[in-house]
Length: 355
Image 1 (tube, one colour):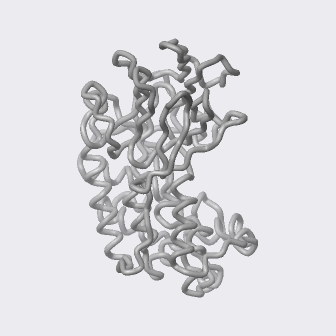
Image 2 (image 1 turned 90 degrees about the horizontal axis):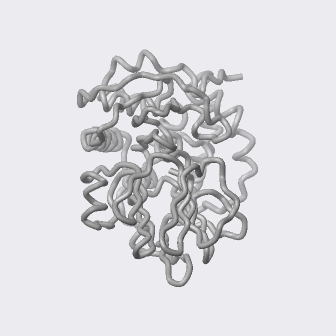
Image 3 (image 1 turned 30 degrees about the horizontal axis):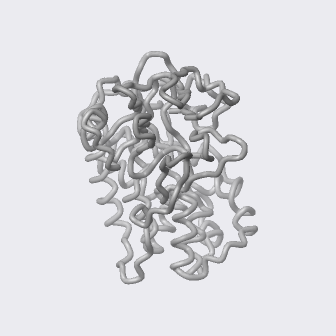
């Protein structure tokens, strides 16, 4: 789902293979976009068909992973937890980084008034509530299970569903949810066609339209990014490295030692209070864009969800530590949805062995 709307020609990205002129605008996109009059759209909605939203000009944000570009009344609309970055200046709106543009954060609206601009929208923000009860491990397991089941039940697309043949916990959670509701899918291997794009290295790229289920954002939104978890533990005076050091082997230990043990020591952000840690982690997660659609491949990204982001920001310390050190939360979710899939999991995150 690559696009660039401009009022003048500028250097094309290799991913912008389609070009359309509408009024004063030049719209460049990748393949796979749909058109209704001068409204262009791509992706899926989990609260009704996306094509119906467009035809009814229902632009209220809904759950899913989509973009709607209206060039009659110039504007862009997207789901309630936008999966792609946006950059703009007065003459350009795009999700590909361009010089002399500013990034638009998730809690902002984008509009066109003699030029593209953005403004903060408090209704899109996740705000800290000190009176809110922290979520326990068991509550979070039930919450995520119910959410994932509803998510796959509401996935209403005419394309076949592909699932990466992966031994990772995030992809396996999505696969297990599909198993639970009885949806048909095909296991596929990465084709590595788009290795220059980080998130797409694991994608099964094909000109045959399909939707590929992914576990992207699972590390971050399900509490397995050690840096994010350390920030959330700061107000409690807990050192995550010491929690790892209590064990000779855990699912995450090798990954932690290789990528995060030293990195965490270098962090200088002040997360000494729950308010500060909440706001800091929320900002990082909300604007950590990893996977959106490309050409005729739609990517199913159920972990990219505001409710899940908020839930993990209120996780209690037991849930934080158990998930980040052992992936206990993820494994328990798989166990509830399809316990047979536990046997396919790697013993180590990204197959990185402990030192």
